[in-house]
Length: 112
Image (cartoon, rainbow, N blue to C red):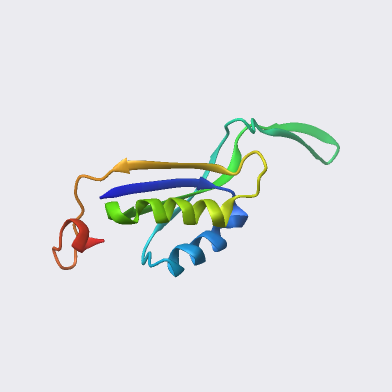
């Protein structure tokens, strides 16, 4: 099993969710986060005063999948969220040791 974490632009969330649903992903976790990478942040003007925005708003998607689905999930997220501009985000894939569905007690891939 794998744990896929994607940090994407917030306005791409609905497209990513719909694309993942279309390829058979039945559940995911979404968290609003802030961060920066090569995009670094930017300056903005508010009521005539300039200020620096160091951390940019992003959305973190987390989904647990079987080993056979990981490539499909990564490609689906890329295709749904890519704009070709700096700040599109990152995808991380980690090994998932175990999973348990609390309601039924099912474990590992049965719990996904």
